[in-house]
Length: 195
Length: 376
Image (cartoon, rainbow over all chains, first blue to last red; front, side, top):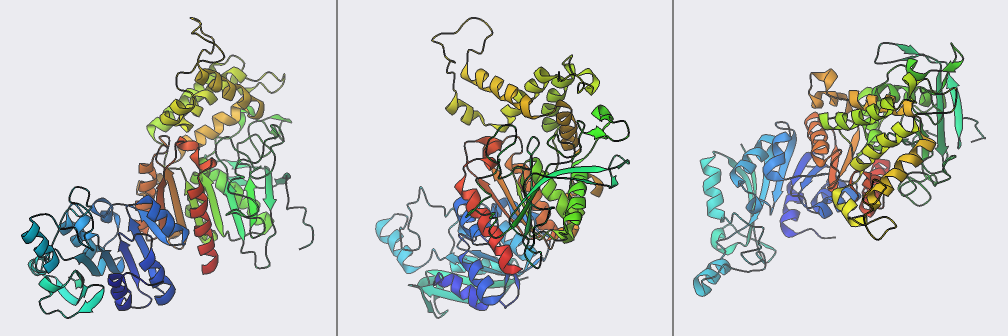
């Protein structure tokens, strides 16, 4: 089974045998891969109960919870990595969630769709409407993405918080692309951060 | 393994004890009614303890001797099911204080030759667990692959991981709580007062003439039974439908189906349960507060349980032990660093859902149990 490309990047860059918390873990695909291929001690959090049940039935340790509410319950620095994949833009307070991630984990992987991708810009400029694209497939009124952001927004945030970027990866059409003009060319970004 | 008298259905055993109780007393001898299913494997690693709820018993997957009904958890326990006698050695023990064969107020006090009645010591959930441990020692089972239970059974499960963390590899706690709330205690007190207000209760000494406080016990059961169901479930099943009549009687018969149903639940309960046991076990549940001995900090209670895997399940319509109580447990386990899974399942059945047909529950427990087997 092949992982979603952003998850594959994370899986390839997590140290074997480490402890991770996957926030918004979905059905546990990444956790299962990390557990089975990288001997990782993986824990997960997921809002959707069907996804939680599926992950639990795979034998994964997943709790049904809300990143905006339940991360405060985890002790400081209790994981090597906290992972937030395609979830940041769905949280009520992405800034506070990121603070929590780096409190709980020594490092954090964060992946998100880039709202400054040329296709999005084109859609807004040409049609004057909120874009419905491959990575943002839902109409404005029913999208779970309530805090759209761009790669440049994220870089500014990381700089303002004084965080260190240990790794960055960019995707377009599910393929890795170079960092040059990423804010324009990348559909999707993955960052590895630490305090 | 050759045939061992200790194993099988309808086992009964008296151990010399003594059992040190939370009340500060020492209790002996200790009587046990229990059942086992399946075969203990060579390295004794496949034992699963099932803990029953308030009015439950050890007939988890065998017919009840009084009612003739199938075991109370045959949806989960049996051939091809998540807890499977073909793979597991399954133990279910009637709790201390009950009336189905383990020591309780209806048992004979060897010192007097008469039933204990109210001279039976007040017990706690932890005492029930210590009693179970005593029996497991006798059965030669030092380590449990899993302990599993719902409601009061879940309380025992959690208490197992605190009292004997080294003996429990996986714990499944369903529709349960880390402490009895004021509302929980209040409902139990209504039940106890109903029993004690029945003139036939007579200070608990009613065993001699076979005339127990059935009316009081039935009312206690009726009140409690409401807490096991959900409003939506009651509305769907009964609504305001009338019982075998076309119009309201303008009297106090059971006009409504829900009244008739509750009366039936109350009366049939008295055939299989002892009123004094009901007093003692509800008391044990009211005294239950896992955090109390740990300065009120639940995470501290689980500090030694970090090598145990936990699976916590709640139901969205359970208002007896609502999801918030399970979350409280999960947060404490996270803080303690224990591996924990948690899900709130959707069911119209209220608290009783854990005993009923919720396919997701089986799927989750199966995955959880099997993952533990791979790790072992």
